[in-house]
Length: 210
Length: 196
Image (cartoon, rainbow over all chains, first blue to last red; front, side):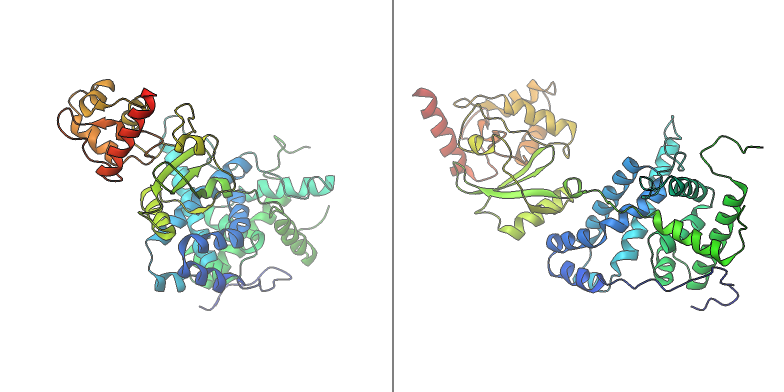
């Protein structure tokens, strides 16, 4: 559980808040599945959509992925007994389902003859600040495009830690690795992101100028 | 040109990533939750579930309580229910026996064969009956009489698809999801209404 050997290279690193909804949601689910699931939806559909959006890069695809993931979660829960439900960490558990569902979608799309539809974000969705400032639009699009340059694991680590604002323990849970390894994925992802931004890679422009 | 190694840039990068979180998650409730409600019908109160595409499930309140209905829906469709926000169009009239009222149905969870059986059954007018063999022939599968019977026995929306109008070629009225007496009563009342 130690991050031995992993240099923390990020300035201003701070602890993300632990999940304030976990206890309430698990208790509600153990009480009654449908009512509890409504509680789960309220607490987590935002973070599920945020991760889906940064995984697919497209708003419509993200809505499909989020809805499909939530339904898969419901089906899984209906097979769990009350003890298992109470022991659940709902947020990392749900986000694991989102990433697995996406992996399946990509795999299935690759098997289809026409294939390539929406494999990796090609035309990323700009960040939410787009309407506000042109400068931010530039940054948001650029950054979203740069994210697409990372390996899946690095992108997932960075998105979970810094877009979804999960504590590193939950990031590790979703990635299915020790905390130290998760830190390392985040750190390497950020390093690569910086390099991408520096090189202008991943911009919407076809090629670098000059 | 900014340099990429200053702490400032690290902060800017993290702030930029945080800003990628959408502030406006869309409402996915219609896609995730189906609605349910209790309504009167000519065989007593029923519970009805519907998706955004139409009515998907109907059972008698006398047979299943709230939790039993949810559990049956969960087993069959794997989807959560919440109280419906509105009554599906034409539902109440159809449950009241109005032959012209045809609420939209969502039969997507069924197989093509089951859907065909139910679609053929939906064409049988009130006051009339058809045999299981007729249904099988109607969908171009004349040898699948038994399978047609099974599809009707698991009709997700009895009354709205009048599976009670399908009877054996000889003998009694045959089986019914809500019991033989209910089937007999429905057929008798429909026959009487057609005569008037």
